Image 1 (cartoon, rainbow, N blue to C red):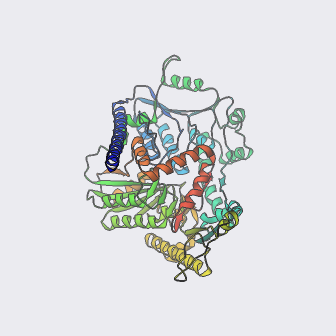
Image 2: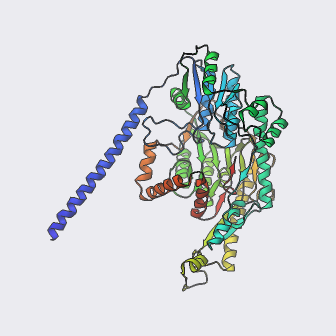
Image 3: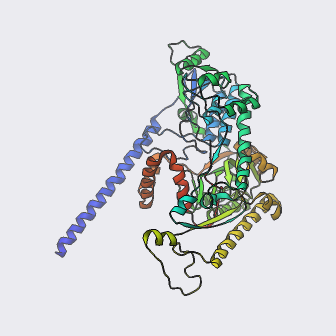
Amino acid sequence: MPQFLKYLFASCLGTALALGLLFFLGFSTIAGMISSASEDKAVSVTENSVLDLRFNAMIPEKTNNTEMDPFDLEQSNVVGATDMVKMIHLAKEDGNIKGIYLHPEMVATGKASAANIRAALEDFKTSGKFIVAYGDFYTQSAYYIASVADSVYLNPVGAVEFKGYAATITFFKEMLDKLDIQLRIFYAGQFKSATEPYRLDKMSDQNRMQTRVYLNALYDIFINDIARSRHVAPEELRAIADRYEGYSAELALKNKLIDRIAHEDVALNAMKTRIGLGEKDKLNKISLSDYYVAKGKGIDISTAKDKIAIVYAEGTITDGKSSEPNTITDGNYVKILRKIRNDDRIKAVVLRINSPGGSVLASENIFREVMLCKQAGKAIVVSMSNVAASGGYYIGCQADSIFAEPGTITGSIGVFGMIPILQKTMKKNLGITVDTVKTGKFSAFGTPLLDFSDEESKIVQSRIEATYEDFLQKVSVGRHKTRDQIHEVAQGRVWPGQKAKEVGLVDEIGGLDRAIAAAAKLANLEKYKTKEYPETKTGIEQFIEKYTNKTNREDAVSNAVVKAELGDLYPVYRSFREMQQARGIQARMPYELTIF
């Protein structure tokens, strides 16, 4: 019997190893196929072409910094907002590109990125080339982009969603009360509203006030940009929105929101006419993804030895080492910044931040590496995108210079902690009680199975306040102000870009290009090349990383199932799960905010 078991074990082990090898070779083959398909795909821009911009997917800040389809054998690039602006500028000077066709099904990006894309399109028009927009239906964000066009077409049964901005927040308190789930909540800053959905059933007065301030600031940008392009007075546009008079094609035309009611073939023929083609001639449309490949994927071909590192910090800040797209983990970013610090050819660092914040511990670790880069003699410049709040502000608060966009949401200098207490719900709903034997007064402190004593609550609150004071001190050093001056504009309050400049939290209003130019000036560089971090992975690389790790695989499968079931409600679930999984003190945006 022992001999039989030995052979059986050896046979099973061999089979397992063979299957593992086949599994690895299978993935390697797929990866090779994808790589070959990508390399073999030659893209060229023919004469009389039109750049076809369809905003039908989430637009990351950095190209491909999003979850990719592992089985997309063509490996279509998800062009980020930064490279999208570059491609539009290149198209302006490209003799083969005669115009741009906008077909914005949706524009899934932040207000600052949308404004940058729109500004690039306005600049494109100065070349004398045309922009034509067509939509079966324009969401408000899609119309913001489409309104820049020379001619805006709308399907006869379509509509323009033009109604003004609203911010919605989901509150969970009543649900928690029904489940008898207690939360011990601690925070510093009267505007630090991240905990409000778990302790209130509506906005506090402070939260409502700060939300109204930055919502109005974003709406002003929206209205003024459209007014300039459509030659309609801002006050009239506000009145149209208040009357919701874009809900039919006829009303949209009457109110000058569009230029013509027609089907798409009419818009396509109009572009052919502009180019000088006949009705039966083919209109050469090149997608943004293909144009990105054709123009060298934005690669910097400069021969300069000195470099400026552009570090994209995009997503929630979390503890750990994951390099998952659209996530900022301290393990990954500390490694990136350490590599930059030790590279003598990198003379400056531009932090392009698009983050609502997150873990204080992770933010502190990243902040430390940023400061070490600064101590190593590298110029540090922050460039804020759609949001750079709380932990997103923390990591760059001592930069040599801070740039924000007009539509940036920043500030939120404050911290909080939330600890679930399950003692009551376990007893009432499950009949489970908890008892304990302790060697000291605080031995059971921190377990979710027992409620906090008053003394324990005071300890947590003192830790929260100490962390807030440390945050204030860091910002005061970086902004060359006193602690009290920063406290006056902090307390968790969120500010729009221009207001943030007025209160001293940022230095200049401007985009990434201005930030890079400032970094070059600080580093005394006349010639330089740029290097982007982190390195983005292909779809198959993401797939292998996600599904070959047991924990990652289980999370990925469960999240995919929940996402498919919940659909549009998934962001609410994700918000609740992120708060549930948060560890330690948090420095993040006041809440999960939806502006539409």
